[in-house]
Length: 365
Ligand code: NAD
Image (tube, rainbow, N blue to C red; front, side, top):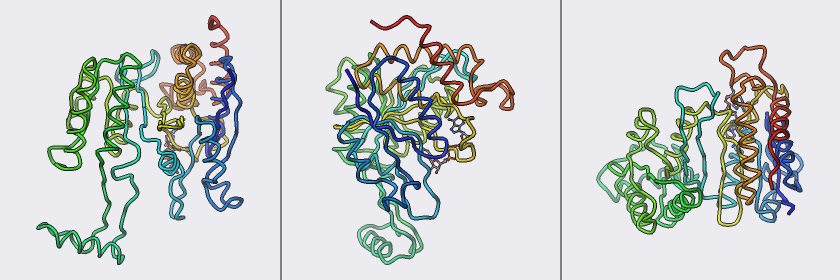
């Protein structure tokens, strides 16, 4: 079966890591029909927007996309294309597996966590009021008139909506994911001791949903305690489900446990579409240098293969990546003990190494 997939190369190092990921995905033998669509600042002049309509149409039509990182220009008024895509396509669950591979330089071994981050609400809903504006004053006056605590008049206001609907669907997603991939436990992360209503609702809904999954263990942790526990005894945890902001922060912590950004993949999942991308950004200072690690993007490709039902190809690509990592020879600078190690290879050479390993593996049935 041919899979038609939207491929967004991105900018900065995006095109380099995307090309490398595309090459290894093609080398799995799975038949892809790539629809390449550009986005970001580079298409502004042509389309007047960094996220042209035909990009959204392509993803809606194909239902699956893989994307290189896109730079968010500072001070231009352009909001992040990455955040906007998640919102436009209602990609409500961001799945970030954090797994140890032998050969990765890290303080930890045998880590196998999956973070599921709510992706549409919370402080990332994009509802903010700038200090000193009429709208901000109005919001402050409205709130001050309705409760005892005073908000200072020179405040900026960021709104943090957490809905029953948004919480239920992402917590349910985490349990379904646990079931589908044979995981034993889901931990709901929150700050309900202080944020009684927002996170109180999150925790309440988490507990309700957990009752529908008696085969999966459930517990909850306050986010600050969660961070400490992940550093001290990460082996106690399995699937974590978190509101948007905590999810953003804790997933970087978890990426740090398994070797850093160069290896951290991501899957943005909605009811209709899925968008796969590395956790890292466009690393602009390395643009065009064939230097950065394409493995995060390749591991995102592994997640995409599983999503497409190509489990055997996903296993083979993961095994090929694990073999290159274990060997430790043909890896980029960030995976060497010394970042200036002259034996570090470039982005495209990592793709060559992974393809070689893939070809040496027994073919899938
Ligand atoms: P970044 O992840 O691009 O880079 C931070 C540093 O991490 C780099 O300088 C580099 O040293 C290292 N690094 C990142 N990716 C690497 C890789 N694949 N291999 C080796 N080293 C790597 O983060 P940033 O500098 O904060 O962001 C740069 C731009 O990317 C910003 O405009 C930001 O908005 C954007 N961004 C986009 C996405 C996305 O597309 N989903 C995600 C995060 C940031």
